[in-house]
Length: 479
Image 1 (cartoon, rainbow, N blue to C red):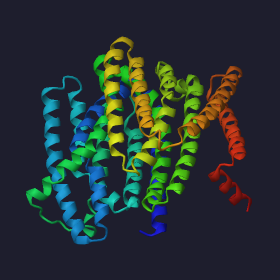
Image 2 (image 1 turned 90 degrees about the vertical axis):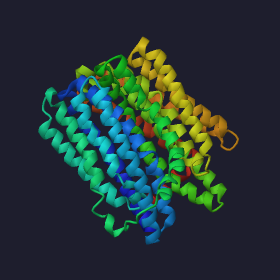
Image 3 (image 1 turned 45 degrees about the vertical axis):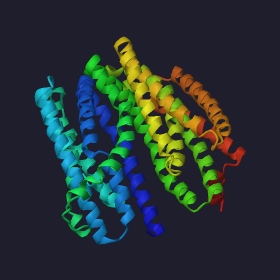
Image 4 (image 1 turned 180 degrees about the vertical axis):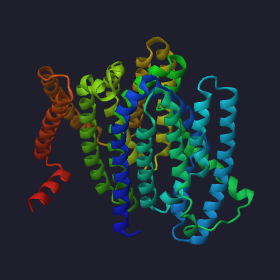
């Protein structure tokens, strides 16, 4: 692809990621007030269960199909053959999993069976999901624009039809249908990109082993990102899941910035490594780690310092129990940020798949153990303890395994400086909260004060250390 096309793809991807982050900030407060904590928790629980079936239905195909399509390049006939055999495998697996889901709903599910059946639309969407083809072709425009449009329509439908607690069924239907429409909408453009080639059985099941290998880290990661909500729902009930869901939502939305940053930088480092330019790759990694930790620590202290006012104003007084959960969960952000940069900008580009897979398996095991012990005793805080155990163990394991290849002391020293900035910011925010009324205006003032303090301190730090990216941007603005 030409350089301009790569830039456009990055713009489309970043635009979609930013849109995905912003939209929940609009829908979450509305839904929290309309369907309440129990409604939010019910949807979160049922979605988490359905998500596991979708994981098994796709079986690592999103990553595997993406990679295989990108490898064949512009060869139309080879691309058609590869697509046909991979999709045939996907069709067999996803239809089988969908049937199992229906059996699960009919014979095992005891509560909210009707909602679980509606959620089956989400599971069924895996049968039609061929987004991996477009990712492999690097046609991000098609997927990004359609996703944005579908999410916008879903948002409008929620405002139009979800008006009270009894409308939970409508909400589940709107969200499940949006996933189905998103998957099906990619099929009309398929004719121009592939021609169906009937594969033989051997060509279909040759994809089993590589898909399963790529599936392992996906399912392992899901155990400490999704399983806590399922265990909370089983042990404590849907209302507690609702509190936990909204507390975690602040973290996950904010971390989208880190993921987007890593997604942009990863191909650059991979390209430099592929060309043998190790010094440049290392230099870029060092700068990326510094910038990412600066952002991650800002998110940590930002969420912790305003949660007391933000949660009741944003989600409603009913979600007051989520305040302590939000503050506690924010502690994981620096660890998640650290591990994400190590994974996306070192382990994956340098093909250290073993370390990556083992780290997420370790995180999954730690999460399940801590959840099993702590949730029955401490409820939602028990799920927080499980998340702490998972995220910290993943970050520590990856760090220990790559300690000889990366300048860890340097990164830790930089992170301590950002931690000091975060503490100063938090003090300023809490002092501001002490003199402001608990209102939307007061909250906005707190956020502005915190932003000015942290950005100001960061500006002085980057200027003094002569950060390369910062100095280049400064020179460009002054020129």
